[in-house]
Every structure is written in C-alpha cells, then in structure tokens.
Image (cartoon, rainbow, N blue to C red):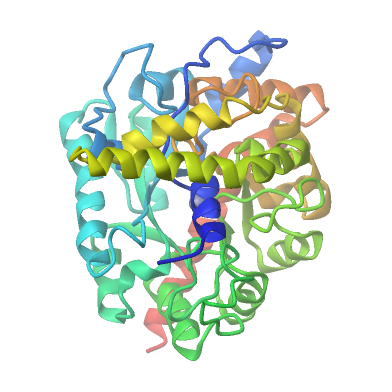
Length: 419
Ligand SMILES: [Zn+2]
C-alpha cells in the first residue's frame, strides 16, 4: 500500500472522475465569433488525453449518449460541437486495486475503446497513424487513438510493450503517479518508502528506444524531473507531455519548468496543456492541497463504510465523493488555461504547445466555461483575442501533435530499416 500523500496525488492527478453539474457555470461567458468558429471548424483539433475509457469499462457509459445531464466531458455529440477530430483515450490502470493483473486490465480498457468504435461506426473510427487521423477527419469521424498512462502496464516485459503497440497503442506515459520498476514518478518522488532509480533504469532506457523503434510516442507527463531529462537524452524521436502545464505559472510537480519546456522545443516535441484547475491556478492547487488530508480521510472513510456494509464500491462512488470536495474550491477563470498555452508558446515556441485536456479525469475541476469538449472553440476565440494568427492557432489545436506523430513514424521507419 502507499502513503496518504501518494493517494492524495492519485486523486488529484488522474482518478477517473467526471464533471459535476456545472454545465451552466457562473462567470462571464465567452462568445465565439463567426471568425473564430470558422477557424476552429477548419482546423484538425487533437486532444492527447482523456480518461473516458474507465467510464466505458466500469461505468457502462456509451459515447453516443445525448444526455445533457451526463456529468462527463466527452460524448460524440459534445465532440461534434467542439469539432474535436482526434482523441487519445487514456488506458490507465490504477496500480493499487489492479496489483498483480496490470496487463489484464490494460487489455480490458483497450477493448472498451474498440467496442465504442464498433458501436458507432458512422461517427467514430479507430486510428493508428497520421494517415488514419487525416482520413477520419476527411470522413467527419472522430479518430480514436489510445495511449497507455503508466509504464507499470507492461509488467517489465518488452514483449508486452510490443503487443500493446500491435493492438494500436500509440503513446505510453513512462510512469503514472507511481514509480514503477524502471521509471521514477513525480507523484511519489519524495516518499522515502518508495524505491527510486534516479530517473530511468537501463531497462527503462531500453524501453524508450524500443518505443522509438516501434513508433510509439514517448510521453513524459507524470514522470519525475530526472526521468524527464533521461528520456530526453535517450529518445531518438520527439517526445510529448500528453497532459502537463507550466510550472512557472502553477508550482505543481506535474507541471514543466521553463528549462524543460525549452528542452522539449529542442527535442522537437510538444507540451499539451492540462485543463485541470489544480495544474493551472496556484490558488486552486494550494486550496486543494490544504483540503487533501480532510478530503482523503472523508472519502476513504465513506468508501470503507460502504464496503463494511457489503456494498460493491466502484470508481463512480469515489468520483461522486471527490466531486463534492472539488466543488468546494472556486473555479479559476477561463483565462488561466490560455495563460499556460501562451506561456509555453513564448518559452518553447508556438510549434511546441498543444491540448491535453485530461477530460473525464479531473473530478470536474476545470476552469469556468470549460465544461466539456463542446467548449473547445472558446480556446480558438481566446487565442484570437490575444493576437494569435490563424496558422499558429491551427498548430496549437492539433498541427503540432500531428507533426510530432509524423516525426515519430519517420524515426520508426529509419530505425527498422537500419537493422
Ligand atoms: Zn494523468
């Protein structure tokens, strides 16, 4: 078992939770102009991180849902309204409850994404390459991709890594909040009870190179700082941060320092901004940490009580309890999200920033006005308001991620032909 701090970070970072009933959030609304709408509709919009597969698998959620009261961020209807062209669905295996069978749960989550695509062939299609994304876009379908969130899923087995690639997984986050046997994580780096490795082990470096060879994007979100630097040094292909923001604006260990942003720029990669209020707004982060002890005790106490009463406890129960706590902290304004995009564009360059929403994974804690994928056009409006050109906006909305994916495919071809 892990420490309470670890558990607290678990809940903050990625526990699958859904948006609370904040569909009509207070605060000034952003009106999307006809010009912004036209730019947004013409763009290929790519989001690199959504935790929806747990809703598919454990919650019985159908992405075709048109329920306006559904608390989630993602549905085909909301995706269409937000003109989201490609989503990287996160294959995230909670490491405590799945101890001993990480691979099985990884396969189950992968299956859940395929099942949704099978159910909605007219509006959603599995995608495994840049060409697939572009084809889906031309057909007005959501391109569904998959990224594994946490290297523990491979169970220290490089063969399993290759199997995941064959099933269509196109990025892997080297660690989640938990340090695994070959990569240190930011989530428990200060926990003396966890065995750390000073970044990546030799096996971890082998994994990075094998990902390069396969054509699986190396994702450095969640990793400890030293793991980041090791991955940057080893990787032969550009890397991504699939859902991280800027530490200069919000001092959370999951965010990237300016030095890291510059290193990703030099590497040719992209940092996809996380929409979680706690990674965007210092006041939110501080308030969330301040309540963490009381919150964790209350949530865990309630779950223990349910178990003692013989009730089966699912992530939905924890989600509901978590949302009661996140709702106690005021939401930051929409502009904080744009501040992070703007900061990364200024420090790393406009070619190195994108969108990594963390939709359906942040306990409903997003800035005002960002309530689901349907709100993505507001980002285009806000960037126009700050003077960004149409070309630069298209890069941020998806062009940069597509370029990185294309470079990763090229490096893979080169490494395979060199053998
Ligand atoms: Zn995460």
